Amino acid sequence: MLRNRLISMFTLIPITVSAVFLLSIIQLSIIVSIICLISAWEWGKIMHFTIYIHRTWICIIFGLLCAITMIMTFQNYLYFSNWRIFWYIFSSIIIMWWILAFILILSYPGSAIFWRKSNMLQFFFGILTILPFFWGVLTLHQFHNINNNIIGKWCLLYIITLVWINDSSAYVIGKTLGKHKLLKTISPKKTWEGCIGGMLISISMAWLCIQYIPINIINPSIIFICSTIAIIASIIGDLTESMFKRESGVKDSGNLIPGHGGILDRIDSLVAAIPIFTCLILLSQF
Image (cartoon, rainbow, N blue to C red; front, side, top):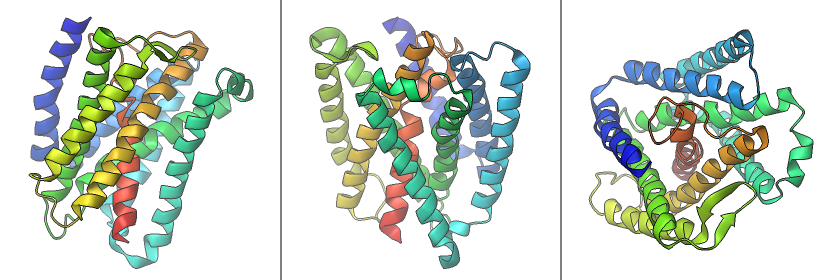
C-alpha cells in the first residue's frame, strides 16, 4: 500500500506542477472540470446510485454548475467592487458548510439520522463539497493575474503542497507512532499522533515556504494564518468524505489511483483546503 501511494504521489507531483504553471486558464479549467465530474460520479457511488443514468444526471448537473462558475471567473467579477457583496456571500456559504461538516463529524453517527435517507440532501452536500473546489482552483490561479500572472500560480501550488505534506506526514507518523484513535467511528486508522504530527510538519513548512515563495503582495503573517486554517480544513475535508463513505459502507470512492482509491479519495483534503484558503486570501484583500 505504501509503495503504491509513493509511486502515485511522485507521479502526480510533476503533473500537478506542470498543469499549474504551463497550462492556460482554459486548459486548466477543462482538466479541473474533468476531475470534478469524475468526483461527482464517485459521489454517486457513495450515494448508492447503482443505475448509471442517475450518476450521468449528477455529472450533467455538475458540468452545468462548473460551466457557470467558469464563466463568472473568466469575467473577472472578482475585481469589480459591485461584485464584492457576491463574493462575501459565496465565501460565507463555503465557510459555513465546512463548519457544519465539522459539527456533523463530531456528532456522528447521531448526525447521520438527518441525512442518511435523503438523496437530495446528500447530493446537495456533494455540490457544497466539490463545486467550491473547482471555483477555488480557478480563482486562486487567477489571483492578481492583471498585475502579475505568476502570483496566483504560486499560491495554488503552495496550498496543494502543504496539504500533500500534511497528508503524507500524518500517514507515515500515524503508521509508525500512532496509538490513540482520532475518530474511531469515522476512520479507525487515523490517530491523534498522525494528525498532530502532520499539522506540525505542514505548518512548519508553511512558515519556511513563506520566506521564499514570491507572494509579496500579501502580508506573510496573513498567509501563515490562512495556511494554518486551511491545513485544519484539509483534515475536516478528509474526515467528511470518510464519514459519508463509512455511512454508505464504501471503502474507496473509486480505483483510478493505485494506493489512494478514486479521484475523490485523492482530493478529499483539497476540496476543503483550497476554497477555504482562497476565501480567506480574498477576504483579506477586500
